[in-house]
View 1: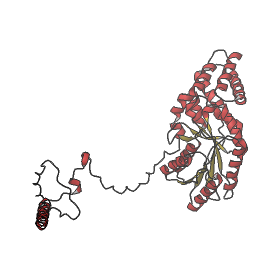
View 2: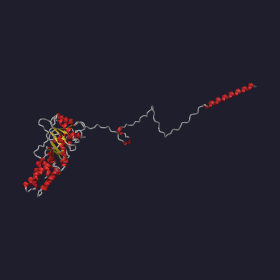
View 3: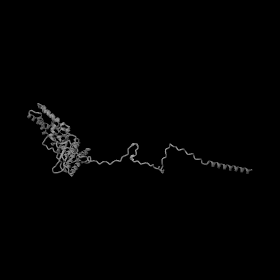
View 4: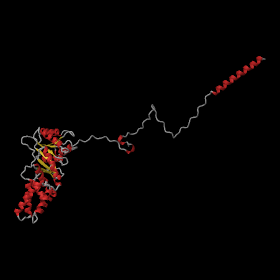
Length: 401
């Protein structure tokens, strides 16, 4: 009986084990794959990856870069052309200097003849009493003739009027012209010395306070010399004023004059020395040296100009030292003149802006002050408005027609 029960138990266990194996094998059976998803037709195409085959190119004509429109409507970048060669400035032919002041007389007379007309009006009075002569003196002093020259002119006029007696306007005009000419001086050599007999080149140094037109006058003087058939080298020894060398070089280029210059704030004497050296090597007729005109300290200016003069004279003596004065400064210009006269030996005076003042008497005053003649006058802003001073033309402009 026990044997039968044991057999039944074993049979049940065997049947249970076999059932578990069957169920386990069924559970491990792989599930079928899910159905494929429908592609999203709105999704963008996938980006190509490295190694993907490129699309076979379409058979279309190729366009050049000039034919392709850039984004934003921008034009294609053009290839830069090489810069055109800089052409040398055209050389100008200055006006001849002969009779230049006579041609400019009308401009001068417009600003100057107030003096002449005032004197003629006073001299035409029927009775020339002491009060009238005082008015004549005041008129001359107002015109910057100076005290001593005024006294000389009034004394000469009084003597001649007394002898003349009855006076017609023509006689008065002739009388005044003669006395003014005597005062201005007609027997003085007013030529600018640029042609030494024993050597070349002539050496001219131009001095003056900045603001008087010194550098411009130097450039205009180069035009005067070129107009008279001379060859010129310019020395830009005003190294302390910004653009002074550029300004002078521009003047020179217009008439074919070579400019020697140095570094900004360099040694002016060195530039002046090199300018004379270049002038000698080039065989030119004249070397014009523009100098500094700072009046901050009188001693500094003296030392500077004195050094320039000494260094230049290692080549040759200076033929001219021209002082440039602004005629509109009147008596203040005489103070400047005295300072420069102490530094270097002034040989001639250049009066600029003479057409801008009715004080033409400064011509007389500055000559008396320095004992040297006015040699050149500036009558405007034009390139050829610098003229040799001619006493007759000047006096005729003073008293009018």
